[in-house]
Length: 398
Image 1 (tube, one colour):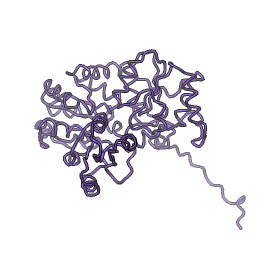
Image 2 (cartoon, helix red, strand yellow; image 1 turned 180 degrees about the vertical axis):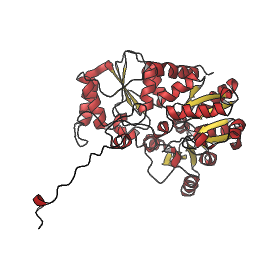
Image 3 (cartoon, helix red, strand yellow; image 1 turned 90 degrees about the vertical axis):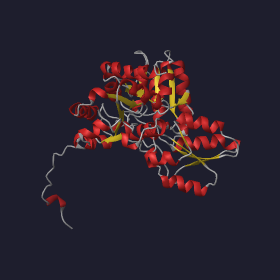
Image 4 (spheres, one colour; image 1 turned 45 degrees about the vertical axis):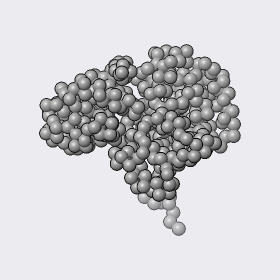
């Protein structure tokens, strides 16, 4: 056997991981990105049998000082501790309506917590239990990319005709860009109203960052054609578009999408219709245009919930949205003899939303109960000013 003590020493290389590598490893942060960092404290073990009781005790100790928001896509183990549940904008408004709560614990993702910080008072502190709970869609449009896009529109001679409309599922930076350029924010519930308003202000719309919601709203709800829409790809020179294409377009769609809703296909729709005769297919407007066209009903998360509440007993439904919500609805309405199935055979959780689990929530609540502020999400004043302006324009929509 070779004596390793006499072997030539191995030269150590001074190799530093790149910023992107650190982000992927969860060991660094980009404050302008949806991606975050690892938990700075020691998380309790997921196998701890006392987690539920620990969360309950910490929340009780905090009393009215804490207000816990739970997005519809959260795990059941987290949702049970939410004071209110809802979609991202509803939750941000609920937080703003509770000025007595010193801590807003947002069980959602980064852009949602930013929106809550924008809409709440300066005295309130918004906390995200896991800073790595981001949104892949929101990450598909950075401030630098959107600024470059505006330069392209300016060079094409159309920027003065363009009104930006940004989906709620965007970073504070993108909301601020929208506010600076005379645009508004929309949700999946009021996208049509937001676009109608935008076309009263200008001739074209730059829709950020979800191409599918923009396309579906324009074509399905407003009577435009697919030819009225062009797709701006931030990874190609000039967005992959000619100046003439930009001049001819009514809707300039950003090349972004939801990683969950983008998985559903026409094949999924055809398959579920074959498996469940008489099924009603209900999908979210973040799905691809061909999926929306093949569905029976299309609507936001709140629309989906209300549609199932109003559905007759014995009806059958296949839902195209995040799996945690679909499972929760299936359990809720089983007693009413409503059959609710997931649209696809493939499991389709929102992976970043699922980073908020019971250990992270327990760690957050116990830290706050001990007087330690952790994982605060804070939008700088300049960004907040213009992002709030865009949000207020949405709130003023008829």
